[in-house]
Length: 194
Image 1 (spheres, helix red, strand yellow):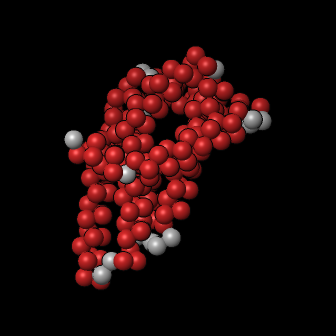
Image 2 (tube, one colour):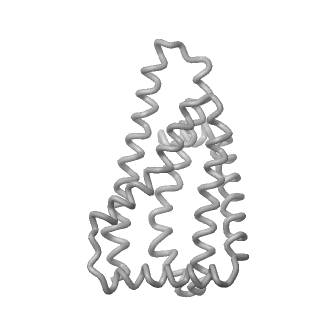
């Protein structure tokens, strides 16, 4: 109910974010498709080595978890900082485009280097489950960053501290969700490749 109201209230902003994300995704996928063959071969070796390492080696899950948490929290921190500056709105939109670009590039690279069948399995098992959660979280925090950045100029000094705390709490809650996604990545998705 609240979620539906939230989306309806901000549907134009979400639609713009979706368009920018989609454009970034398409550009990333196209750029990946036109990589030189030696880079594709290097990427294929890296992906296959990554999958094989799960099967053959004893990997320290705590190191993987730390890396996953840092990688997944980085977009939230960047968007949080961008929301704290007056010129943050265009920068947040640019970051959404870059985020879409990186996902499109990665998926296309996997499909082009490993092959459609093996690549699709890898994408469905390793990338899609986490992105189903991460993309909406990124959109949600981006909207909050945009709203906060727009309000900075009109905020009274007395309200500023309270608003920053509220703004940060939203990111903190989103951070908890991202940490849960990281746990899923390491302990569930990691076991799929064994």
